[in-house]
Image (cartoon, rainbow, N blue to C red):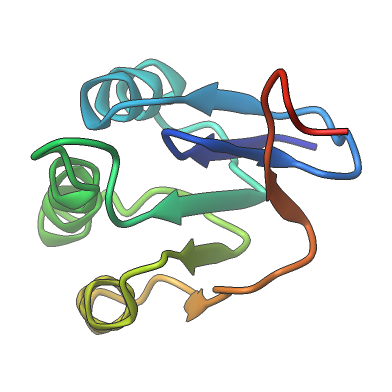
Length: 117
C-alpha cells in the first residue's frame, strides 16, 4: 500500500508507513518520481509554512488530468487549519475527477515533535 503525506508539521499518529514531503517542491518531486504508480492514499495539507502552499502539487494533478494521464489515486484527503483553502483544493481536484474530500480533524494525523508524547 502506497501512502503519501504532504504536510510541513504533521505525521500519522498510528505510525502507518508513508512517504512524507514537507514542502510543495518535495511533493512535486515525489509525485513526479512515482509517475503512474498507484497511490492508495494521498494526504495534502494546504499551508506548508511561510508562503508555501499545496497549490504546486495540485497543479501537477490538474495538468495530468488535463493531459489525459490522471494519477492513479485511491483517495485524496485534504486536511488543513485553513478551511477555505482546503475547500478550494477539494473543489479543484474533484473537478478533474480525483476522489478528494476534506479530512480536517482526522485522528489519523497529529503534530509530532520533541515535545509530543
